[in-house]
Length: 519
Image (cartoon, rainbow, N blue to C red; front, side, top):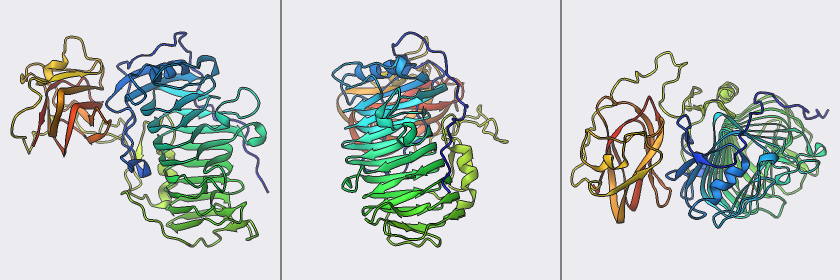
């Protein structure tokens, strides 16, 4: 018996009052940059870093998001756009510029690269307004809700897809999002997460997809098989009719997801697609894995999954369910490392981590939710003492400090501090961000080889830096991530600007010296 898709939404996020202005401003002190690092296939093909190393701005309207994209020096200049409030048709208009190609009826990420969109503050809700990624690369979307995007009725947006990717898209990481509709195709909705026309190296992680006829697809037709290398992990699919996802060609890795109330079918591998399906929990659902609605077979490798109250159809001409005793019919090699939670704990760990406004919590691979950085968790019974200083470097760099005499800049600085203080060789002077997070850069007029950095905190502030990224500003490549100040080593790289980005801190960090060394 087919169960109808629910016609209501969870009312967890209310509509927020919006400022009338459509401008973009520098990130406010309470803003937080995109946390953690990309996982899954988004780490391949050079990796996915989004706007790391670039300017951070705040947007409270869709027009402001477009203005941020259009205001860059060029379409590849890295930028992080922190979004707060409700983004809808009423506050989203087309903006023109050499570094963008936008539209009034959607958030348009077209023919651009190196962009992060992250929800901050009291939350970011894209209401009836989809996010469209086209001919673009190195994109991160994190901590946002996208709801009730329609392809018919009024208003319409993005072909009815909450997030849609098409036409030569590469390296996209979508993380900690909530994607939801209020019905199926007959009610005007389409897919929640669609990829087509040569979209590759994508990860969907720690997200909730619910109350829709279609979860999402890879490939728009049986002939659209140029897509693939997609990872789905620690997501919750709930009250979805089908396509969780639909796979046409390509390779997918699907692990540690929780599936509840898949009403008609679930993972639909067809047209030669291959899926590695590990340690998922399927519950109260029908035909959760197989090839459906076609005679063009797909393939799967299964291990460690739990099937709890799952029913299976009889095989037919265009129905080939994997159950009731799912067995592998192919092998899939995964090129990246990952940790698997036991399937038995997936419902609990996904409930604690998946979706927007969950604090960006992740799993540690042993069924325990944790913060994406070492910032103290108020629910942790034994948090790290924030006053404890970070240890002295155990491998002090030798040679010439290349920062002395170089240039410096960065994000907003606290009053009375200077970027130049981090390269003056004086531990008595320092730079601080305007809030708890921010970035400072050292730059040279010609390419300089660097393989070690020493970050030294000013007296009285030791231990304030909790988590960081070190970024090649020119390429956006993340050279290193970690926690605390000290010596950071990485493979030697020739660059003209290197950025130390503080992504988590306790109190106001004070960087006395940002030393750089060739070896």
